[in-house]
Length: 170
Image 1 (tube, rainbow, N blue to C red):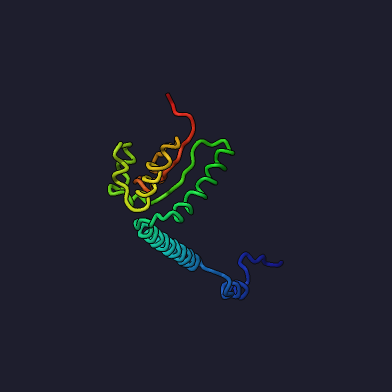
Image 2 (cartoon, one colour; image 1 turned 135 degrees about the vertical axis):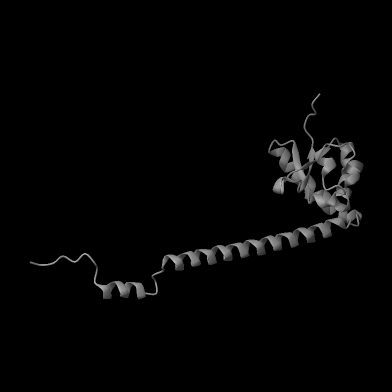
């Protein structure tokens, strides 16, 4: 009578365990931890790069432009083109500027609360954009609104300027 083997041949099992492609549960957990740490490091590096880019943008936008007639033309020609394209799509508003709330002296509090004095909190190029609207575009019938358009971590983030030209509510 022949005996049935319930255990695999030990030498075959040891060969499989000795195979470098085999990972023990501990090895697999360590591998997963290393992979998660690598992803987290990439994420942190990405966040660091994003924060550096944000700081560079704040620095650049905090410096007012020298609004020569040529610089003004370089702003208004593409703006008119974008406004025309939006109107052709049937839109009655267009976001014309987005900037970090750090360019508001109160970090966007007045904008968020619809305080009528919100323009006084603007600095740098956002202030210039507001003044351009006030001095040239308002008389042409355009309205300007400012809204907090991003809420990272539940706090006010970027601000958007929207030019509007549709019918006003009466």
